[in-house]
Length: 50
Image 1 (cartoon, rainbow, N blue to C red):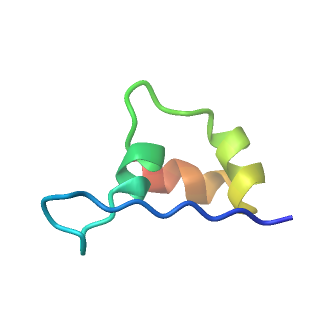
Image 2 (cartoon, rainbow, N blue to C red):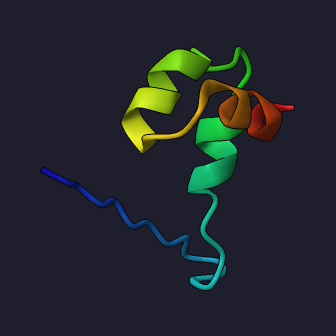
């Protein structure tokens, strides 16, 4: 089952910052959890977080 979440800011509806919230959070989210969630290699997730 696949779920999608879309969010728009009131200031600029063309800007979506979900990736910044997920891959750029501080402290970072566990890369292995993100890898399973997005079906990516953990090394790819670590590169995105860097």
